[in-house]
Image (cartoon, rainbow, N blue to C red; front, side, top):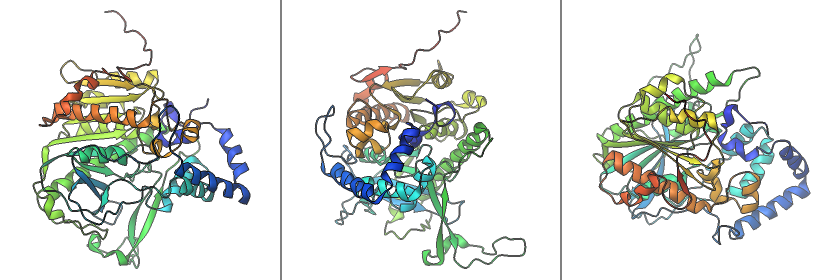
Length: 454
């Protein structure tokens, strides 16, 4: 089967890896009668419990299992493309509102997914909106921050994703007492993202904006500017593009950490979005000696590049890493612990060998594989798609997705406790770090060539 992008990287592209069959599928569906049938099917998908190999449970993003309620807000500290854009998950106090944000917050994200998947925008918007448009995430929107002192995780999404698609992981970490900043990357790797422009922007003779302190403009003087996924041009080599992108992603993760450092110091925050969240309550709430970085696929490559450049990150968790974007020189620069959590079905020899370049006798580097999983066992799609469609579009493996994410989360928590010096009970899951337990193996299921004898 032809791979979607170089070396099998592709994150959400795996939704459509059955190639030409999808085009036939779309051609048959894109009629009024078929659209009506699709809506009916989608309605049935929402109303039916998930059955089969996984027992019986309703579709939906799982809530956090920790002792903390979880709140979330979006934060954009500068309306221009240079600013931070992230979703912040945090332990919260009950707000009384019980308002949960939509999982996909804007229709433009459907358009971006359509562009990424190289299909008709109206069709993809219609289908995905019917399948996923009603889902919300189990976190309280704009809830008050719970006073405390918390470790911090910066999360980097995969190729074709955006800030909301890993909410199950982020919510679980926040429920366990972390503040989590899920960055939305503006390097052209997100299926869609946005910033703002002034509605009445003055431009000088050389085409430069004459505005000065524009980041403080009110939202009603701004208009949203969407950026969609940047495809490879015909004849363009992929590595230079992806390598440039991973470096920009690293810069954005560092900028997010800088912003949260400022918030922790009590510096004023200019959030473009109209929320009631009181950032002053976050002063001295972050233990900045206990910061981890985590990401999936392209985001996992971002983890490694970030660890090579920013010593403030104490350790990294790389979920089903796509190593292709990294240049060879980066491997010797990483001096921090890394946990690789791989799926059974995504990895291949060259990619795993690149991970093993990071093996060290002095710094702990661990790799485990969760059996029965696929590349999409980490984003939220796996919880929101029934067995039939999940298997067709490789959004589900043979393992219950709730069990798979639970193993991944517990291994991540145990690893972060060990290397950030957390005083928690996450060490009860230490065996998972060594690949001990049901559904998990140490190292990889991929047969690697034997090392030459010395």
